[in-house]
Image (cartoon, rainbow, N blue to C red; front, top):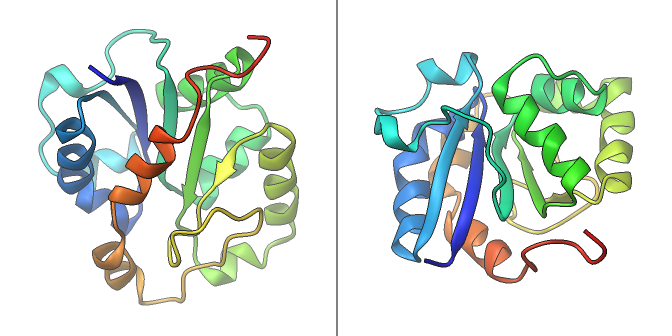
Length: 174
């Protein structure tokens, strides 16, 4: 077993590709716990109950994919009102490696709160992947309105695996 990853899933088109993401991670021997937001439950395909978060966990890494404007802004504000946000907030406090893959519309990434959220992610040492390019970046592009399904279809879940395999299990000093 390579390690344990918590996969926080929010309500955006990429959530519909969860089965593909799970296959990619589990085929590389990662144990995956899915932590969906309440809104994401309508977007995700059937996930075996034994994969869905049922108790507090301490994974080796956390991936928030897709990460919506709403979830990222709540996280940046320190809101802890759901299991998914609890996983994200705990990961920061524990020094767990974290990757966020924002999937937010361009019109929302033009909102003034977005800049503050990206600053929070940088300061919290969260890696951010641009969903359209697969590149790590401090300022991911917004998704052009109406292209979400196309972006989700093109997204390579192998990028998540590459990120996982390049990260230490915990940050120095933790």
